[in-house]
Length: 351
Image (tube, one colour):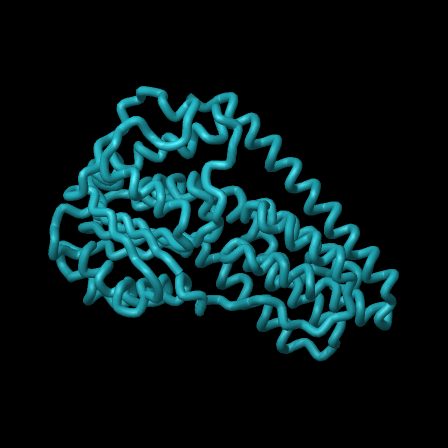
């Protein structure tokens, strides 16, 4: 396992570096740190070399970073917040990601083949909106094929308390380490179900190239369909209707990951308290669908619980199970088509 860490701080013993050191204590595998203030990396000069060729015309420390981006499994961005943004030198380094944008926009090739996990740690004195620097960091991660991004870790009162003494922040740091090490939210399906494995594999392959937002839409459609089949009036049960509503808010950008998690927990609590095994499986479907806003893997688990519900409703009838899997696959293919169309439109309006 390889992890690439971008450090945007000028202080060699400041809060950002102290948090990076905490990450390094338990992080497995090989690590490389890019120090934006001290490494020999110049900003992009808009020479447009990367419109036609991979890489960059500037021969400096970024060449090694490009190689590591291709190879690594995890990417961590750590920065102080300066004037409601990542630090200037970190943005200089980030400007050299232009080659990844140009891969799809001009060269008609995939920017980075290997998918990655990502995380962002920000520190600040407590003034200003953290959504702007966090949004910038996520944009950078998305350009280098980072599909799964850990919720933001923030210490936002560093004028009064050191980041390492910020309990909530340190819990977040530990969570990032576990996430990168593969020990966080391990939710690979362990559900015993009768299934059409061929179609399930097709769904999983397509899932790998579908973004979180479309997976959330897809899994919610699965859940609502299954709730109806299980005879659950989802409009009249508060935990269910709120769970659906909160996930839809997250999709539109008006809901937080914390809201999504809390809503999913409430649905799972409802499932635990339900005695009917068919309805219990249907509620598990919804619980994981709602949680897809937190981690995309929940969408696959939701699809599996939906099949479990069908198995229970129709006494293991493989034809009914296959019919449901075919519907799931068709819906996911539709979501993928929408995403590709949106991507093409966004390319037209960029730059």
